Length: 262
Image (cartoon, rainbow, N blue to C red; front, top):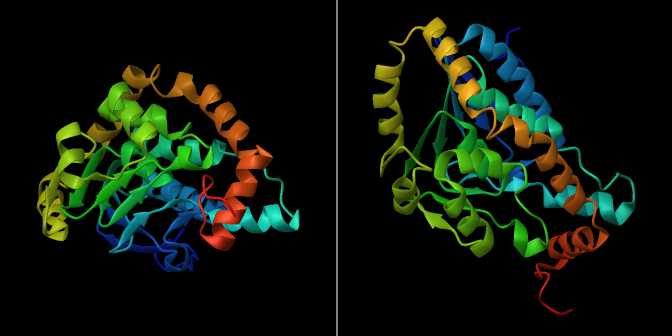
């Protein structure tokens, strides 16, 4: 399948030999995650697993990914035209592919990564960012929780840091994310940082990467795979709560947070 010349609505794709660059591209919604983005990215990643050695996941200059598409949730809630209970399994499977699939995955973060955007970051093998990048989990502000993000995030930064990010909902700057291990390397010019890493990483053998990541999966199975059912159930619970959905819909319409009165 020629993914480079296929027209995708949520992605921009380019190839450099055995390196595939996947750019999340929903500028109208701050790169929010919707069903189409998940479907297109899953399809492209499946091709990359067979044809590429390295996958670089990128966002926009000001936002890597802002998390769930609240506009889509609000429209579905207000019109009653969509089942409010989201299905989180395809997104969890996508993150698992980034974490344990045969390609080396790199998250290149510029700007803001929030909620599910942190899930993409935590799932990747290597995380590079620019010095102005920030990382946050805002879910609890809306009565939600980062249920599916946490197994991947805990694998990276440990339970205490993941818990702190969840409870405070505060943006974590790049320097702090680097100290915590959420980020592996950070520079003002992240494009140059990515280039330097790719010069080294492209020397690796694809078969060796695949065998290593298969072994890594066996080590991390308890941390990620065995948490899947609990994570999906918790996600479905908070996204099917009509009060949460009503507060999200109101936020989209008015800009008021759940604790603010009408």
